[in-house]
Length: 152
Image (cartoon, rainbow, N blue to C red; front, side, top):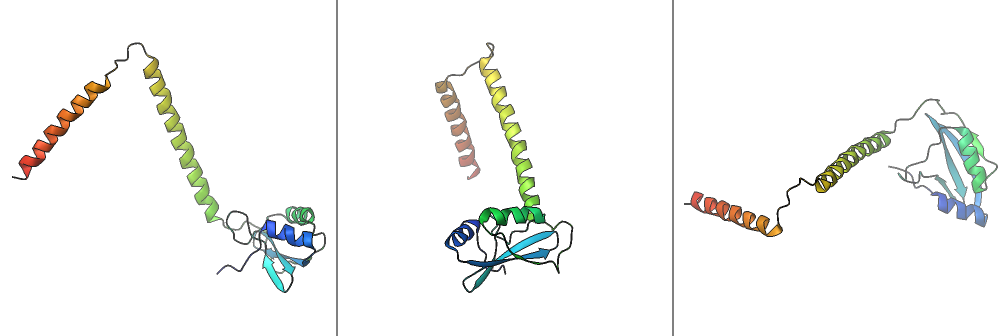
């Protein structure tokens, strides 16, 4: 189960109100997280989209983030820090969906371009709507008759 987290907006408001008592930067495999101390609570910072504990790959990025929020002093616990990359299966799935969407978008645009070319072609034969309706009504009647005869 994921511990309760704190989001960026809440952290900013707490810092602005002077309610943050400290921050602890904690080393993990592949990066660094930060635990915010305020009131009697300690909460890890959440990632914006996943709501999971945010992991910064580089210490420099984390320091810049904390300074931008208004926290310039913090403790560091590097006992469990291990360089490398943490597994991100959620990102792999998101990347796969992005590629699928790009492929569909390409196919869709090709279909639209082909339809426009056909529309602009002076040799295109146009069938009036009424003719299509009559043809569909005839086919529908034939299918209904087939279905009716199979039931007997």
